[in-house]
Image 1: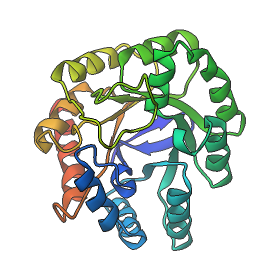
Image 2: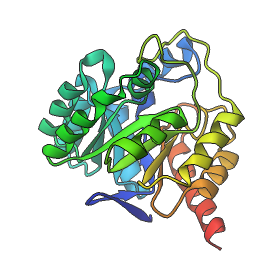
Image 3: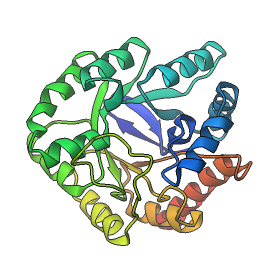
Length: 266
């Protein structure tokens, strides 16, 4: 699989996401519970090893105690995926997540998208530069995520991040809380996807495109085709999988991305 460079880290253009491992379906409470029940530690590790087999070399996962424990077991069993860590508002301040990420071998750490949206809504993005410097100061690549273009417009003018995580959709407002609300009605609007992908073309940092599938609402071929047309040579995508729905989902998704990128390059 082709790779990109984020700082000094070589990253596969398909990155495995981990929302399903933690029961974040972004569909319904029932589906989230099903994902939590399905994804035992053994099944998560099985998925990680499958990702290796199909050419993926990176996983994005939360810097929480659950995912850290699973990754430790996986690496102890010979796993080789590298970890890009996401801060977690409900587990503490970003600086605490940075410390956990560094102590447990993450190659990079980025600030949670809902947290960035929340600070934007309250005029508090001035808190972010010191967090990014703390990430860089311990030797990890540093990044920010977000669901609204204004997060990245601010970043371009105010910080020196190594990468961005750009969500195609803004499912819920984060003014009241930065955390995911499992009972909130989510919306996935085409105008949000269009606005974010148009902005990406002007950004100066590598971008990891995420929520390209609209949490399973978009047809896979269309979603990967759209992403391939929107990705620059410096960019990658992050996609989670739920093989209970389709056993070969991970391999098929990787194939769809590679085929779509090939058509764009032709």
